[in-house]
Image (cartoon, one colour):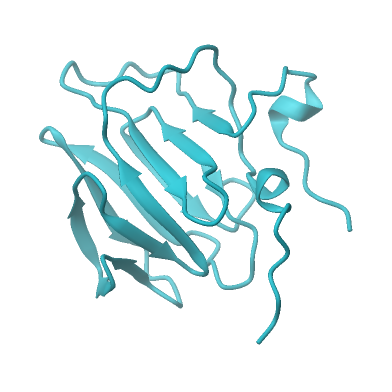
Length: 151
């Protein structure tokens, strides 16, 4: 099965292992705290380092989750007034925070987020111990190790 290739892979950027970084040319506000989403099934870490990030299936989404149960523009992560918020963008399957369907919700350490079939744990710890940078638009390659079975 062919997998989409991220811009970093296409440009020959070095692999950064199970960590994915999203960076922007814009400087975040002084109180900015990066958000890490840890995929429960594989422990893949997505580090969000810009204050406005769109998650969806579309190739232009900041974080691409290319499975059919994820809408093209599924949800948005926003850093506002010193904290992270998640906002549904009128997706078909919605978003859940800690098992509850929400349209918008503040995010706290260890919250559990469901976006389509993806289950993430929120990590707001300050020091990730990661170095380097890479702009990654698709995480399919790192998610492809365990195969999903149709029910």
